[in-house]
Image 1 (tube, rainbow, N blue to C red):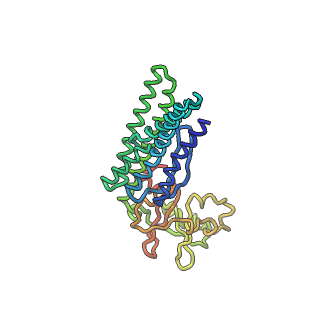
Image 2: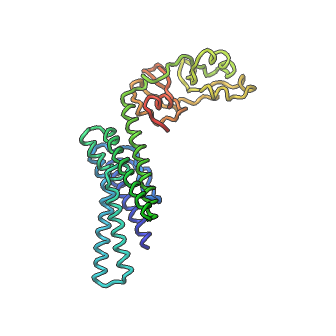
Image 3: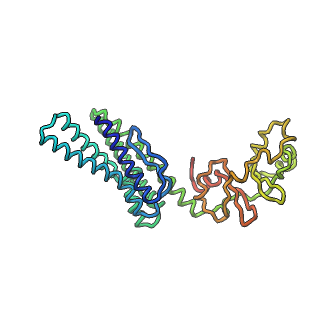
Length: 313
């Protein structure tokens, strides 16, 4: 019963984050509970440092409140001379929740204390990515210190050090990832699609057979992705060289480009002035069209974005 109650209190900790996030119009994708705790996955950043602070602080505040109430209940049970097992369980539950709240207040992302620190740095610098980068360094230090504490425990004969080492490793790993993403976003904001795009040299007619395109058009260019145009020069989609050569030899003369193109409705279309931060979700082989007014200006791939921003998948 105590274990189930503690699991419920962990869920309450994460629900506090989620409900506060929803109050500030930040969508919540999911809440995950696992062997090293829980995590609320938010879809985006809060609009203000204050909202970020309140969302981060909600979880530890909930755990500390549960710990305080449980502790008071345990003391009341002791005064009323309740069974020892019941007293010990209530006091254990209080200690575990206080420990959960205090541990999460350590000042380094991805811990809640790191997100509180990030909110304060965001307020101070006015730049959420710079704040994340600094808080991630703090998270790396905190994770390293936790892992070192685990090593010391292990050396002194306490096998529980393995658990601390695992926690420290996860904290340091998550902090490194968040810092890398923040630095990539900061670099991406300095670059725009028009500066990174690949100019379109060749296009394919939607009604052209694959065999003819491979013999007459593709050999004369180093282009790997080709816009496909229909009547009036309207772009109907794109097709890659890899997709073209994947068509069996005996079917190429009867297969038209429009039959194997990726329709334009499934492709992101951006302006040349669009920051690369809006394209960092592209996988290496994904393509976006860069359109200047009504004119197709170029193509940009996920690889192009990652190469310029230093992002990785």
